[in-house]
Length: 177
Image (tube, rainbow, N blue to C red):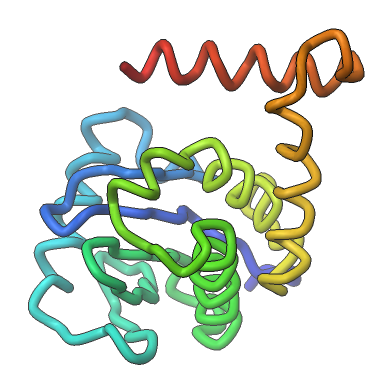
């Protein structure tokens, strides 16, 4: 048993089980097709449950999966079979609440895709390499907001870091289209 709880992946899927934002932190799924198969299987197993008011927990292929749904978004956090479910649920709740804060309470697929950069930054603030960094939604959303703050300002008024972040954001958007 590990001393530090580790997260295997965090998934944000739509109501059809398709990816909105996913992040894997282990090599348990070495190929993209293995990752997609896992996502499809987890979605199929959980889609008929009513995890809208509070998080649900299930065992799936020797993994503990904690999940929660809101509108057409399905949030999942996966840990190993020996991980503490309460810690996994805390990570899920932090992610869920931070996304709610960043999307200003309008948690649907369209809004999530329009703010995909914020959601991906949110994932980076919560977990790094499987190690939990932060679970407080206000702290997570605050850090993400500070990263994206002046992205609308002209490039001449931005610092080098902000300009690079803006360029990266525009490149990501163009590649995703």
